[in-house]
Length: 523
View 1: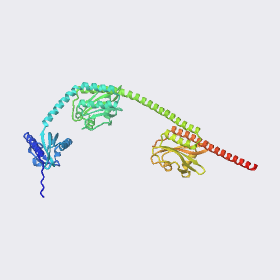
View 2 (view 1 turned 120 degrees about the vertical axis):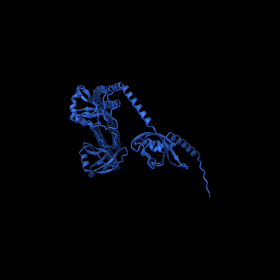
View 3 (view 1 turned 90 degrees about the vertical axis):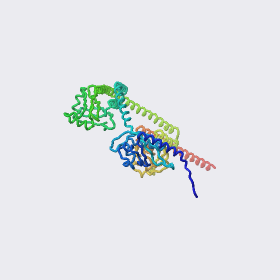
């Protein structure tokens, strides 16, 4: 059948009317007008638009719009384009590139274009040359900048001097001085050298315009500086308005050219009678006559920097002494705190040994106290059967997700080096050598092994695990040894008690048999 569709074009007609009105207004103002497709290529433009860019109209058909915009301004144009897509219209100021490579400023108005079905088909571009306005704005800006610099001379000098007196951070002082001097002088680069000797010096601070290479950190070594060194020591400045005029100093001229320096102003920074360094201004773009007030400014600031150096050196010495003292106090405090903590842990274990004859309770409490007291990943105790040459992990306290090893039976013959050392009553620590095979530990760790021994021999061992590569220190090892001694006492007491109890029971049974026998005989 026949289908009929109706499209409301009222809004589209209004937009087209606004576009026609805008085109007429801009056209009367001799503006450039162009139409571009979705890809940003020209599909139509008026003669004024082409002439402004130095092209014939036919040359520009199919040309990419972006090729006529200065590369530095393309991001701003992209932002405006996205705003046009969202709002229907946007404006922006950019630099355009003519066919001959020259540039000019233009104001651009972007208007989105749609077909009758509301499909985006490109955009309209309306332009106006604003180079004269931009030039006038730049001239006014430069004049205002000159007035600002002249008015701020005294304020700048006083401000830097004040900050130097208030701050003890030498690096910050040098960087601030270099930055503010460069901005005030409008120089291309300002650096502060630190002189290690009459031939060696290093660039300690720098402020440079982005268009010139940085020399921060440069370590210079040359005979030329050795020639200038005595002049600096006497407090003399070196002022060069144009390095190309140094006909008699070709080597110095070549050195300046290597760093793209055309004009050069350098004043010494004296620390007492010693030359600490130099404060240097570079003009790289061309020759420059250094004004008397500019030289005077650098001289004043060099004196202030020398004061800051002295203050910073004294402060550094005091800070170093304080830091060393603080570290010593902190280390001693930590040691005392650990000693008190370990003493309390040992006391609790000793008390449990004295108050109980239950071997299981005492050893379980011991491994728990050690694990928590030393803040390690785990602690376990193995009990030996020397006749069977086995060790059974009977007690453990584990943390941080360590898998259990309780009940594991270990054959000593499988690890002869390890158990020979333990049976020689020697503690040791290692990383993963045996423990990864004997205990299911998956993460990197350090293990400490300490024998449980008394005067009758080795009865077992204590194992402790740290979850990193940290070694056990002397205090920790001493505590573990003391706990191992208490465990040995507990085991020996418990076994002696068990043996005594067994004898008592056996004696009671014997007495009972005796009584039964006598009773039988008497009857």
